[in-house]
Length: 232
Image 1 (cartoon, rainbow, N blue to C red):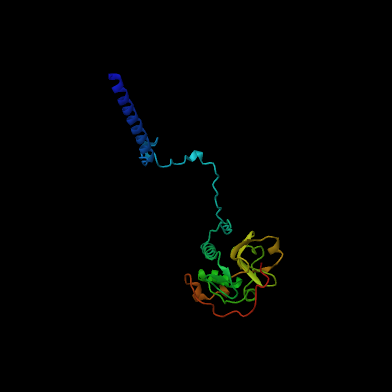
Image 2 (cartoon, one colour):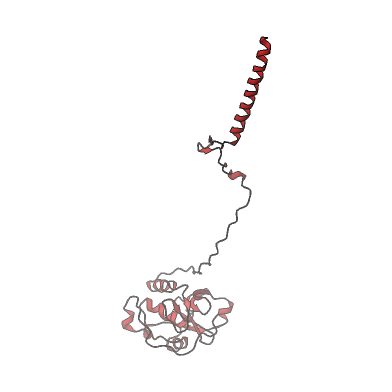
């Protein structure tokens, strides 16, 4: 009699426990996952539900680096100068490196060839008549024998259509149509076009201007002769 009464009760209890367990499991699956924390090796705290950071060692794709394009630095001659005049003239010429070429301009940012020569000497306080390359050739004396490549000498090219300032037997400064103010070596191209040399001497320099420091005076005359038509 007692067994008959207990058996149905056990069935009811078992069924109740079964359905309660199923309901609990279903509830746990539908509830949002609660984040838990994980301590990384570097002692930083990370939520477990957050994606782990990519290990740099696992990154296999090569990085694409865009090359930086830069212009080459202008050529500057290695020359040893001792006199104050030479050092001042070299500084004046190098201060205009990179200025662009423009016909009949004397700076400060644009020069033709004779305008650059005139400005370089003006910068150190030496003033002479501004004109085309031919006028410098006609009014200035030739250097002594063996001093054609002495620093500061004017060198003329291509039927007196172009002029520059000698550094030494290796090269000269000038303002070229293609490239502006630059240093160029006396290579085969230039040597084959040399007409001759002239020196800036005291008899062609205005005395009052020679005593002044760097001046920014405008040229006394404007050159009208077309020059430098065959520069590189």
